Amino acid sequence: MARAALSQETVVDLAVALVDESGPEALTLSAVAARAGVATPSLYKHVRNLAELRELLSVRIIDEISDELGPAVLGRSGEEAVGAFMDAWRAYVTRHPNRYAVVIQQPHPSMRTAGERLMGIMLATLRGYGLADSDAIHTARCMRAAAHGFAVLEASGAFGLPERLDESYDLLKHMIVAGLTAPR
Image (cartoon, rainbow, N blue to C red):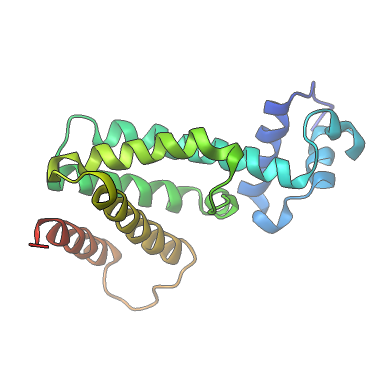
């Protein structure tokens, strides 16, 4: 790539492209600098270090996920909303497995706003089940874990048996909804 007019957003764009093409392990400041056509020290005007770049990437990716999940569940409720949420999560991860693998999964202060937005979408998805407070948080965690786990396993090629993955995923969605409607 020719020398780019750098900004923090451009550095993140270049990092996303690098990760998409070469995988999360390829993410280094020197690799991003090479894509930008600059020396590595030129990046320090825009990111403090690789850790900050990973944080910025995580925020970008969580925002992208939210951008897809929000419209997917909008106007839906109950089983339809849960299914749309889980389908959109799986679709994002399977379309962008390398990008998704870069996301910092632990809560981090720099990701608070993006995380709150994503949690808001999860809680809205579950609103039709009358969950509140801790019950809603526990349920949102379970729904996220189910969608995340299946999609990560699928993206990594971990399901080697011949049964159709869509059927397995439909069963997972059914199990989540059945759990939501079961007496507690």
